[in-house]
Image (spheres, rainbow, N blue to C red):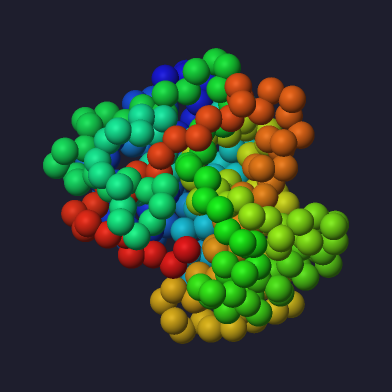
Amino acid sequence: MNSKNKIFIVSHGPTPRYRVVGDASLIWLSSEPAPQNTGLKIIDGYSFFTAPEQLHDYLSGSLGTLAIKNWMNANGTGYSNITVWQYRKFVSLDKKMGSRAPNYRGMRIIRPQICPDLIDPLLKSEIKFILSGKLKFKSVLQQYFKRHNLDDLLLFSAAAIRSGAMKRQDVLEILNQRIFIPGGIELGTYPIRFWMETVQKLEAIVYFFIEHFELTDSIDPVQRRALSFCMERFGSYFILKSGFQNTIFDKTMMFGSMYLVDEATKYHAGI
């Protein structure tokens, strides 16, 4: 455990299903009172936005990412790394807990009653990134087309360019990218500066999208989370681009396992 690592667990209502080692806070995305028996410092994620519930409808759990960025702007002095997990998901370098999810490569499922008492990010001084296991696609564009409404990814790409957050060449590389890190910048452990700069870019893209475009499907419970899915893919690209530009890639970036703490034997999601 690294004392300069700040841990955030994002939840939209459920109580986190595991406990952690270290300086940890719960980003609470709900107008309902936060649970008081978690052992975590409670941060009201809605307090950073003027219309949080409306924005939550657009961004789903990714609203927590923007809330973390805002909290770090005001309180982040002294931290070198940041760990972002979700109320039922975490990433660990320990790859032997639980069992493999039969329908999601790279994920392991661990039942709450056998989950270790305390989860530790296991961050060491020479490690700067702890990431979930890589997946391989024919391309991000093709994979998104199979699972979601392609319109949303294309509009998000346009927003990335027109907002000034990214260049056309970078967006082209994202759409053709064959490697994907589940969770993107919103799941795992990262250097503070890199994480903050990346989230600022994603935030600019999201706000441009909301101002100028509409989601293809705002009703379907999965497809209405399109902005979150797009953020995940763009975040994955930024991580990979940073890693491959780094001459000590293998020493600073470690790939672990993404864990789901749940009673289910399969993962129900919308990747």
